[in-house]
Length: 432
Image (cartoon, rainbow, N blue to C red; front, side):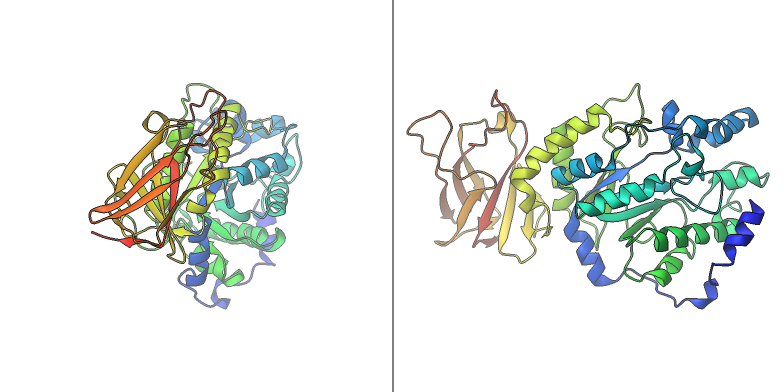
């Protein structure tokens, strides 16, 4: 490995040669905030055994590490891998960007790297899946992000160091020049050989790697390492500036074939609404199977989100948090131009198909020009019911905006669509 690094190091420019950019560009941050919703993909060769990605190496004995490093790559062969299907599913669900685990903590590289033999080209599959993923998602106008771990457990193993992460602070990229050099060579490969990379997620202390990637492309958005990226929980209040919430659909990031209960579609949609109401982006994870397919449970959930997105995307993308995030049963966002307020109203048993509901939205002040519509529904026809008044009625009251509307979205044959309905309110303003 040392000889490979020395050879590749010839193409690495010195860290002293680049100017110090210390933050994301503000216009790029605004662009990132407009995206709103992204697909996280955790996938590596240890998905074959359904293990937590990479972490099973920490504390393992030498027999386990030998098998992990030398045997698992030989059987990784995702014959059903179709990145175009992944991209179409993401696009339908309303996801505007993708973040793929090019290198997780194990050090296994999912691209054709010249820095180590521990990479996807030396598997039974033998193809550059990173390039194929990026090409497919770009084709569907989805922005490209890379997940990159500065920690490298394979590097520790190869250099006869303890295979550990946080337990030994000296054995991190900031404390090991060899590992830092390796990271920079790998990042240069990813940022110069794979087309435009829009964002990077550093899972681990990035040291000066942020400045290094900005020296290659100042437009790159650094998410983790530069902004708040809470995992598996949402903040109680909006956070200043851009931020990104990272969630799994089940209990793990990589494919977990057993013992993995999943969230419901309604929980995921509500999570997306709350994230956007608080001004953040939601990065929702999929863990593809070792054969290359997205597991059916996660595909099904994304298709439920896709149906909701088909009606309601306007309230999620190019939107910001409003004066308040939540009041009573409602969540709020507003359009970037401030002309529209979006009100998310619980559906399901709270507002059944064909039912008229009267809502008092206390924090909205209306006037004679206020207009209210239901996203995705024309409020003119209710299927199979004659002479039904489906119009929306609006009354500006001193204590708020009174809206009377009918839920006419017929998304399921049994009319039991459980997910929120979105009101678009124009020509209105906030009131305390």
